[in-house]
Length: 210
Image (cartoon, rainbow, N blue to C red; front, side, top):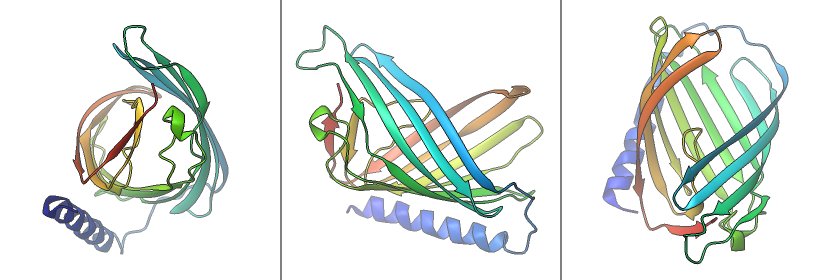
Protein backbone atom coordinates (compact mmCIF):
# COMPACT_ATOMS: atom_id res chain seq x y z
CA UNK A 1 0.00 0.00 0.00
CA UNK A 2 1.43 3.39 -1.01
CA UNK A 3 2.30 6.11 1.53
CA UNK A 4 -0.32 8.36 -0.12
CA UNK A 5 -3.04 5.76 0.42
CA UNK A 6 -1.98 5.17 4.05
CA UNK A 7 -1.98 8.93 4.75
CA UNK A 8 -5.44 9.35 3.23
CA UNK A 9 -6.84 6.43 5.22
CA UNK A 10 -5.31 7.77 8.44
CA UNK A 11 -6.89 11.19 7.80
CA UNK A 12 -10.23 9.48 7.22
CA UNK A 13 -10.07 7.63 10.56
CA UNK A 14 -9.07 10.75 12.51
CA UNK A 15 -11.87 12.81 10.93
CA UNK A 16 -14.50 10.21 11.81
CA UNK A 17 -13.47 9.93 15.45
CA UNK A 18 -13.28 13.71 15.91
CA UNK A 19 -16.75 14.12 14.45
CA UNK A 20 -18.15 11.34 16.63
CA UNK A 21 -16.63 12.90 19.76
CA UNK A 22 -18.08 16.33 18.93
CA UNK A 23 -21.58 14.86 18.56
CA UNK A 24 -21.50 12.58 21.58
CA UNK A 25 -23.47 14.94 23.86
CA UNK A 26 -26.16 15.91 21.36
CA UNK A 27 -29.70 14.50 21.43
CA UNK A 28 -30.59 12.92 18.06
CA UNK A 29 -33.88 13.38 16.24
CA UNK A 30 -36.53 10.65 16.43
CA UNK A 31 -36.70 8.06 13.67
CA UNK A 32 -39.10 5.25 12.83
CA UNK A 33 -37.92 1.67 13.27
CA UNK A 34 -38.95 -1.53 11.52
CA UNK A 35 -38.64 -3.19 8.13
CA UNK A 36 -37.65 -1.25 5.00
CA UNK A 37 -37.54 -2.09 1.29
CA UNK A 38 -36.09 -0.34 -1.72
CA UNK A 39 -36.00 -0.82 -5.50
CA UNK A 40 -33.77 1.21 -7.84
CA UNK A 41 -33.07 1.15 -11.56
CA UNK A 42 -30.28 3.14 -13.16
CA UNK A 43 -27.60 3.00 -15.79
CA UNK A 44 -24.83 4.61 -17.80
CA UNK A 45 -24.47 4.93 -21.56
CA UNK A 46 -21.52 6.01 -23.70
CA UNK A 47 -19.76 5.10 -26.95
CA UNK A 48 -18.74 1.69 -25.54
CA UNK A 49 -22.34 0.66 -24.82
CA UNK A 50 -24.85 0.69 -22.00
CA UNK A 51 -24.85 -0.80 -18.50
CA UNK A 52 -28.05 -0.90 -16.46
CA UNK A 53 -28.64 -2.11 -12.91
CA UNK A 54 -31.85 -3.20 -11.22
CA UNK A 55 -31.17 -3.24 -7.48
CA UNK A 56 -33.61 -4.47 -4.84
CA UNK A 57 -33.04 -4.62 -1.09
CA UNK A 58 -34.80 -5.33 2.19
CA UNK A 59 -33.65 -4.15 5.58
CA UNK A 60 -34.47 -3.45 9.16
CA UNK A 61 -33.95 -0.28 11.20
CA UNK A 62 -33.26 -1.32 14.79
CA UNK A 63 -32.86 2.09 16.42
CA UNK A 64 -32.79 5.75 15.40
CA UNK A 65 -29.07 5.29 14.78
CA UNK A 66 -28.55 1.75 13.46
CA UNK A 67 -29.93 -0.52 10.74
CA UNK A 68 -28.98 -3.11 8.12
CA UNK A 69 -29.91 -4.05 4.53
CA UNK A 70 -29.59 -7.09 2.26
CA UNK A 71 -29.50 -6.39 -1.47
CA UNK A 72 -29.18 -8.29 -4.76
CA UNK A 73 -28.37 -6.47 -8.04
CA UNK A 74 -29.21 -7.60 -11.57
CA UNK A 75 -27.15 -6.19 -14.46
CA UNK A 76 -27.87 -5.62 -18.15
CA UNK A 77 -24.80 -4.91 -20.29
CA UNK A 78 -25.19 -4.02 -23.98
CA UNK A 79 -21.97 -3.49 -25.89
CA UNK A 80 -21.77 -1.10 -28.81
CA UNK A 81 -21.35 -2.75 -32.22
CA UNK A 82 -18.23 -0.63 -32.71
CA UNK A 83 -16.56 -1.94 -29.53
CA UNK A 84 -14.16 -4.74 -30.46
CA UNK A 85 -14.09 -7.88 -28.31
CA UNK A 86 -17.11 -6.91 -26.16
CA UNK A 87 -20.36 -8.83 -25.75
CA UNK A 88 -23.85 -8.11 -24.41
CA UNK A 89 -24.73 -10.04 -21.26
CA UNK A 90 -26.98 -9.91 -18.23
CA UNK A 91 -27.00 -11.64 -14.87
CA UNK A 92 -27.13 -11.47 -11.11
CA UNK A 93 -24.32 -9.61 -9.37
CA UNK A 94 -22.89 -10.10 -5.91
CA UNK A 95 -25.47 -10.08 -3.09
CA UNK A 96 -24.47 -7.63 -0.36
CA UNK A 97 -25.09 -6.92 3.30
CA UNK A 98 -24.62 -3.47 4.77
CA UNK A 99 -24.62 -2.11 8.30
CA UNK A 100 -25.61 1.57 8.50
CA UNK A 101 -25.22 4.10 11.29
CA UNK A 102 -26.26 7.77 11.33
CA UNK A 103 -26.35 10.66 13.76
CA UNK A 104 -28.47 13.73 13.00
CA UNK A 105 -27.29 16.99 14.54
CA UNK A 106 -28.01 20.70 13.88
CA UNK A 107 -24.30 21.30 13.34
CA UNK A 108 -23.50 18.40 11.00
CA UNK A 109 -25.13 15.08 10.13
CA UNK A 110 -22.87 12.03 10.14
CA UNK A 111 -23.59 8.69 8.48
CA UNK A 112 -21.44 5.59 8.08
CA UNK A 113 -22.14 2.46 6.01
CA UNK A 114 -20.08 -0.77 5.93
CA UNK A 115 -20.94 -3.04 3.01
CA UNK A 116 -19.73 -6.57 2.33
CA UNK A 117 -20.53 -8.65 -0.75
CA UNK A 118 -20.29 -12.39 -1.49
CA UNK A 119 -18.57 -13.43 -4.77
CA UNK A 120 -21.61 -15.17 -6.31
CA UNK A 121 -21.84 -13.16 -9.55
CA UNK A 122 -20.31 -14.50 -12.78
CA UNK A 123 -16.73 -13.23 -12.95
CA UNK A 124 -16.43 -14.35 -16.61
CA UNK A 125 -19.11 -11.79 -17.50
CA UNK A 126 -17.49 -9.09 -15.35
CA UNK A 127 -20.34 -9.19 -12.81
CA UNK A 128 -18.00 -10.15 -9.96
CA UNK A 129 -14.31 -10.11 -9.14
CA UNK A 130 -14.55 -13.69 -7.88
CA UNK A 131 -13.52 -12.43 -4.43
CA UNK A 132 -15.44 -11.06 -1.46
CA UNK A 133 -15.44 -7.25 -1.43
CA UNK A 134 -16.03 -4.57 1.19
CA UNK A 135 -16.65 -0.84 1.28
CA UNK A 136 -16.72 1.54 4.25
CA UNK A 137 -18.15 4.95 3.32
CA UNK A 138 -18.77 7.93 5.62
CA UNK A 139 -20.85 11.01 4.82
CA UNK A 140 -20.95 14.45 6.45
CA UNK A 141 -23.59 16.98 5.45
CA UNK A 142 -25.45 20.05 6.69
CA UNK A 143 -28.53 21.77 5.30
CA UNK A 144 -28.67 25.53 4.78
CA UNK A 145 -32.28 26.22 3.85
CA UNK A 146 -32.70 24.35 0.53
CA UNK A 147 -29.00 23.69 -0.07
CA UNK A 148 -27.16 20.70 1.44
CA UNK A 149 -23.38 20.53 0.89
CA UNK A 150 -21.83 17.15 1.64
CA UNK A 151 -18.53 15.30 1.86
CA UNK A 152 -18.03 11.54 1.60
CA UNK A 153 -14.89 9.54 2.32
CA UNK A 154 -14.33 5.81 2.39
CA UNK A 155 -12.03 2.81 2.19
CA UNK A 156 -12.66 -0.21 -0.03
CA UNK A 157 -11.18 -3.09 -2.01
CA UNK A 158 -13.38 -2.36 -5.03
CA UNK A 159 -14.71 0.70 -6.88
CA UNK A 160 -18.43 0.89 -6.19
CA UNK A 161 -21.09 2.31 -8.49
CA UNK A 162 -22.90 5.50 -7.58
CA UNK A 163 -26.29 6.90 -8.57
CA UNK A 164 -24.53 9.22 -11.02
CA UNK A 165 -22.24 6.69 -12.70
CA UNK A 166 -22.65 2.96 -13.40
CA UNK A 167 -19.22 1.49 -14.16
CA UNK A 168 -19.05 -1.08 -17.01
CA UNK A 169 -16.52 -3.12 -15.00
CA UNK A 170 -15.70 -4.35 -11.52
CA UNK A 171 -12.31 -4.00 -9.82
CA UNK A 172 -10.34 -5.64 -7.04
CA UNK A 173 -7.77 -3.59 -5.15
CA UNK A 174 -7.49 -1.43 -2.04
CA UNK A 175 -8.39 2.21 -2.47
CA UNK A 176 -9.46 5.32 -0.58
CA UNK A 177 -12.25 7.31 -2.21
CA UNK A 178 -13.64 10.82 -1.71
CA UNK A 179 -16.69 12.66 -3.07
CA UNK A 180 -17.94 16.14 -2.37
CA UNK A 181 -20.68 18.39 -3.69
CA UNK A 182 -24.08 19.84 -2.93
CA UNK A 183 -27.77 19.06 -3.41
CA UNK A 184 -30.55 21.64 -3.86
CA UNK A 185 -34.21 20.97 -3.01
CA UNK A 186 -36.22 22.32 -5.94
CA UNK A 187 -39.78 21.24 -5.22
CA UNK A 188 -41.21 18.72 -2.72
CA UNK A 189 -39.34 15.44 -3.41
CA UNK A 190 -37.42 16.85 -6.41
CA UNK A 191 -33.78 17.89 -5.98
CA UNK A 192 -30.74 18.50 -8.17
CA UNK A 193 -27.06 18.33 -7.33
CA UNK A 194 -23.51 18.00 -8.49
CA UNK A 195 -20.36 16.38 -7.13
CA UNK A 196 -16.72 15.68 -7.82
CA UNK A 197 -14.75 12.61 -6.74
CA UNK A 198 -11.25 11.18 -6.43
CA UNK A 199 -10.04 7.60 -5.98
CA UNK A 200 -6.56 6.85 -4.63
CA UNK A 201 -5.63 3.36 -5.80
CA UNK A 202 -3.15 0.71 -4.88
CA UNK A 203 -2.60 -2.15 -7.38
CA UNK A 204 -5.98 -2.90 -8.95
CA UNK A 205 -7.35 -5.61 -11.27
CA UNK A 206 -10.24 -4.80 -13.62
CA UNK A 207 -13.01 -7.17 -14.76
CA UNK A 208 -15.01 -5.87 -17.76
CA UNK A 209 -18.78 -6.22 -17.87
CA UNK A 210 -19.22 -5.25 -21.49
